[in-house]
Amino acid sequence: MPTKTSVAAPELISNDNTKNTLLFDFPEGGWECSKCQNYNFKGRDNCYRCKKDKTDEDYEGKPKHMSQAKLTKKQKKALKAEKEASAK
Image (cartoon, rainbow, N blue to C red; front, side, top):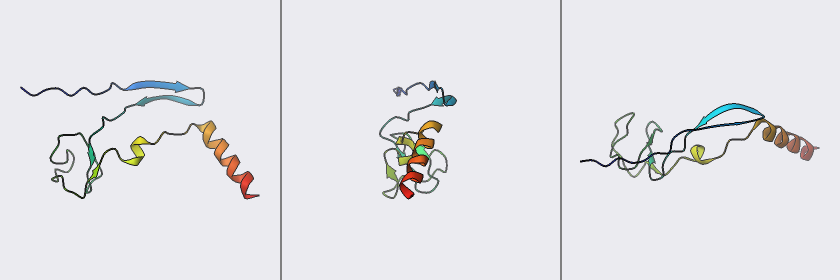
């Protein structure tokens, strides 16, 4: 009988600068398909989306865009102001 892999439940977050956002943290150990850039869970031998067999060309682990934190509007505004101030 196959065993179930536990996956973290999505979490609803909010702050004063953004609307409520649904966050999902993909589990470690997966890989990104080099053909269609789909994130596949650990244990898959072919891509869930395009069905391509897993090869050495595929990226092991979470893609960078999935592991980087998103900035709030307030943080983006502060970075923009900092860049403008340093350009003067």
